[in-house]
Image (tube, rainbow, N blue to C red):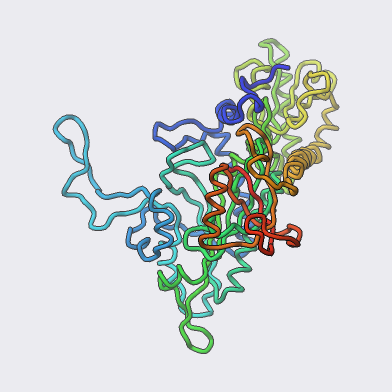
Length: 507
């Protein structure tokens, strides 16, 4: 059966991913290595993610702020572990002016060298910590709950659109608390928010758990993540939440006077997700015809394609479609008005249909003269594109019935996407593996993840395990919070196990 894309997932998953991005008009190269132009449909998905998640963030009492793009290098030098973790990825500004070199080119003016280099924001713990040290004086100022939506720069050597780019968009929450317990409560609240968001609006099942010591955020005491399984069996770290202890507070001087009048350092947290989520949606739900966009984050949930023929019937078809669009916009789905687009571009109806198939619009409605005469519509669900015989699964239904069922249909599409991805995740976690090398033999073999019991070794013992896994192109993802209790010995050391951990290949 011929599909809309030139390459299938089975043929070349990496090439398929890039083609989905191109054919769905999600993003394109920018001319700057590792940076991308996010096109309207791709940015529209990010806007939906922003809107829905921002509401959840504010519901938790967190307030949005904005902090500078440029951070003095000295801010990073106060926190040794943190700066070491990001040093190789930092973009640095050293001059503030350009001059001509006399040969038709611009070069930094030697007289404009900055007294102190400025780092282009890779993350904002340090600059936000400086602000918190001014904002927090007393226990009455706590907890201090802040968030910002911003861009960050991490100079990546190997880039891939949405998944790993030198510049990307994200939200970063930063909070300060009176003690460890309060900070840990916030860390796990954010983790649960991310899990619920991934499994709700994104229809993307994830495993929430704690990262091993070697995978912690630089300077953190504990790091938690949500891990999603892509269709090729690789893991995607889709969000992280960090308990930072008092290390960042000590470096930045974030202190408060407690109820007894003594000075105490705050316990801080940070948590974030990024445009990487869009890459996760592509690789979780996409098929050989393009993207399948979950309804809650689709910029347009229903696209109406009038089948125009440049004749006297066209105006009647357009009037019918305008009425249908108005009726649908009066419907509520997921507690919001349904987002509807009437596509009146001067292009063949079949070309427009396939363009929206590739973009992943959840429902595509086609309307021709016979539909107008009969009061019907032709409905195509993007999650169920074909019938068993390989033909498009368009359903011809009465217009009123479709309007009445539209909200339920969108909800069913989200459920179907999640159910399919959840079944794939559960089917590809192995728990009886004794030989990792044999299990993961062959780079192209879709083997998913392996769950093993382990003793949480540290130091040299952990380093040895990490190197062993690295040789197999594997990493430890996280220790699932909902895993069964450990009841055996460590897969790596033979010592008594304390928890279970997931191992797999990753993006």
